[in-house]
Length: 313
Image 1: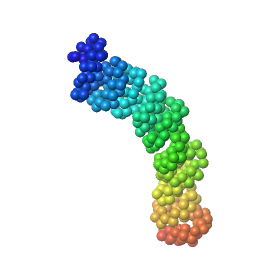
Image 2: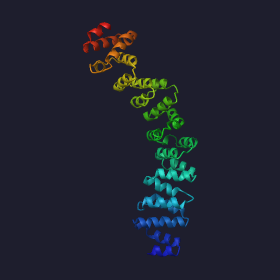
Image 3: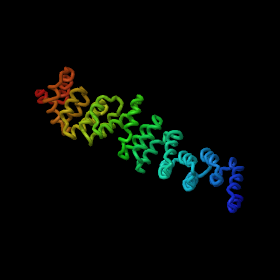
Image 4: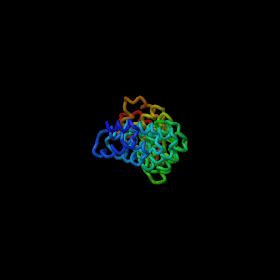
């Protein structure tokens, strides 16, 4: 009633001083909201920012909506409310549409770099310029988490916008697989000598990158799976079967010398068994100069009970 009386006289100062006296002892969301409202109308931005940052009693959605409508000259109170209560996308949209670009940078650089992926994703949705996004990432540097950033950007098909930032992290010596997966995907999509990268890079995840390549270039998928040397055997056999790359599969089988893998491929139920055997006999084994490879192949054919094919060998 006292607040209503002050409001009826348009006395924001009255509301501000009255509620300020009881704020610390009250958990009523309406008291905290009215205090924030009165402080903003009195121009006491320092107090608005303090309560938005420290209070746990106000209703976040109510305060957030009020601050957006009030269009305060300093959006830091809104930044704190949105950051603390999960309205990062909405915050980014508000700042962008109101041309408060420097505050987007303030948020991701100084307030919460961990939310940088969500901010970048929203900016892409808003058709923000790539130059601004690249500059923002350059200023956040390594404080931005790699995995969620790559995921947010990749699901919007804009992964290559990250290339300068990703390469800068590699230059710092970062070995995070998600970082190297991201670079691999960009090199694949831009045809930037991806085969050399897939053969020489030690840090990407073969299963992830190989799967990414399967529908784009099965030869690159084979290269990625082969590099894992054992952990992606099933995927390698599958992609070479589906794409008729039996010569590559045969070479891998001979080089791998894995009795278990030979058993899978030479199984009667494998519909591609004949094609693989033909390539082993005609290409893969004649090319081999390693006695152990020849011995492992012969043992595999004996174990699979393939006397005629053994004669061919």
